[in-house]
Image (spheres, each protein chain N blue to C red):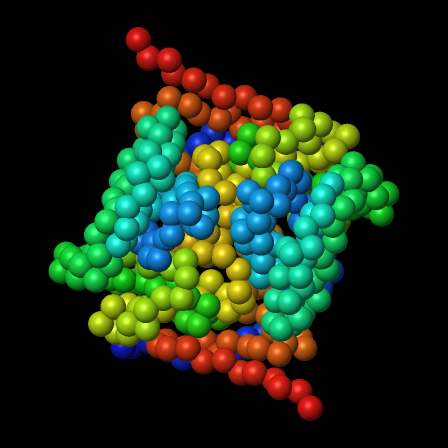
Amino acid sequence: MANSKPAQPSTPSRNDEARTREIVVLRWGHRAQRDARLTTHVALAARAFGASGFMLSDTFDEHLKASIEKVAKNWGGCFRFEMGTPWKNAVKDWKMKGGIVVHLTIYGENIQSSDALSRIKTSGKNVLLLVGSQKVPPEFFSAEVSDFNVAVGNQPHSECAAVAVFLDRFFQGKELSRDCGNAKVRVVPQERGKKTEVDHGF
Amino acid sequence: MANSKPAQPSTPSRNDEARTREIVVLRWGHRAQRDARLTTHVALAARAFGASGFMLSDTFDEHLKASIEKVAKNWGGCFRFEMGTPWKNAVKDWKMKGGIVVHLTIYGENIQSSDALSRIKTSGKNVLLLVGSQKVPPEFFSAEVSDFNVAVGNQPHSECAAVAVFLDRFFQGKELSRDCGNAKVRVVPQERGKKTEVDHGF
C-alpha cells in the first residue's frame, strides 16, 4: 500500500452549503446517568460533521456542556451549546424564524431510496435536526412539529450514526476537510503515526 | 412540505460492492461496564451500514452478543458476531486470507481530502476495520498492522459515527436501501407515523 499520494491540504474555509445553511441538532430525552457518553458522541459528531450548534432540550447537564465547550474551544470553529429549553418552545421558535424541522427516525422516508434529502436541500431553509434517545413523543411525527421524518436507513442502529451520515450527505462531505478557525489544536493528517500542531498563544 | 414523492421501493438485494467485498468491524478496548451502550451502537451501525460482521477483540461480553444477535435475528440478513480473539491473531488471520486492515483514527489520512478511500476500494480486497474505544496500541499505526490509517475527519467525534460514515461512503449509500433477507420485522418507510410488517411464521 505504498503507492499513495500525500493528503491534500484542507479547504481554507467552510463550504458554500455550510456557509449559507445552518443545521442545529436538538437532542431529546437525554438522561444524564444513562446517556452521558452517547449524548457526548452525538454532540461531537454534530460539530465534526458541520452542524453549527447543539441543543439539549428539556434538561440540564453541566458536565456535558463543559466537555463539549472544551472541545470546541481547543479544536476551533463556532459551535453553540444550549440546554434546558423545552422542545416545544425550541421547535416553535425555530419555525418562527423561518427554519424547518427534520426528525431522524427509523420509521421515516429512507434517505437513500426517497427524495427526502433533495427536498430538504432545495427548501433552502435552516434545519433543526430532531433526535431522540428513547421513545419520542408521538407529536414528533406530526406536520405541526416535523416537516420531514427521515430514516438514515430503516434498520435499528444509532442516533450518533444517523446524525453523522445525515450531515455528511447534506454537506456532501465537504465539512470533513474544512479548517475550523481559531483552533488551539490541529491534527496534521498522516499515513502513519500521530502529528498535531498546538498553538500555545502568547 | 406536501409536494413529496412516495419513497421508492428498496433494492431487492445487497449492492454489487457489498456482494463482492466484505467488511468486518473489529472493536478493540471494549470495557463491559463503561462501553456497553457505545459498543452496541457501533455494532448496530456496522450491521446497518453494510458490514458483514463484528469482532469484539480480546474480551467477552455475553450481554452484548445476545443483544446484537437478537437484532440480527429479528431484522434479518447475515451478520456474524465474534468475541474473545486477541486482536493480533485476528489481524494476522485476516491478512493470511488476503484481506487488508484499515484503522480508523483521527490522525490518519483524511477521507475527504486524500485519496485513501479510492486506494482502499481499488485494492479489491476485503477490509478489517479497526476501531478503538480508548487509546490504542501504537502498533495499530504501523504497516505491520494497518495498511491504511484513515480519518473520518481530523476532528474529535465518535467511533460510531466514523464506522457509519466510512461504510456509507465505501458502499456509496446503497446499503441503506437493501433488503435484509429473512427478516421477522421490517419497517415500511412513511412520511408520517410508524408502520412495520411482522412475519409471525407458522
